[in-house]
Image: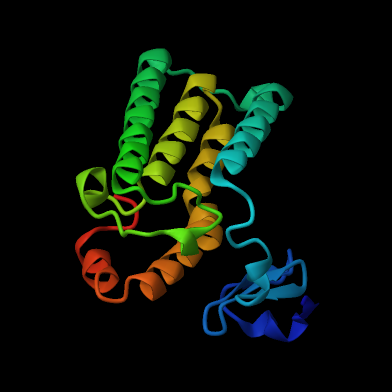
Length: 193
């Protein structure tokens, strides 16, 4: 539930001009004078498949490139760099999907509680979220390919969104499903890279 958060204006992370900010103690996001608590954010947790989020990001990024051409930058090697990032992204995603298939567990990120095994080997020994890392690299590749600063910055916001609304809920589910394995795995392997 959204509620009036004008009283939060003394918070150092609160911008009085935009009426927005973050209250780190109560884990509340203040947006345009209203607050969204950690509990309220549950409305979006694991609800939108990350593939759809990537498609939405790509659409907005493309819209930015066509709507604001003055924000383009010149990079003489943008096609080889974007291609390399795209190839790496697709390899990482493929390796992750194959690891899930081999472990015979769900690949569906909207239902983490259906996981039958905690996959810790292969690409999952380098990053706990290889599919999401691959998706982030894909978006960065698109921003570089389009040579657009706003699109590139939007791509860089993807990990933040995914961490809040996808990864943290997944991690809570993994901690409940695999209480013996999860703490050690979480300690050994980073969330992103």
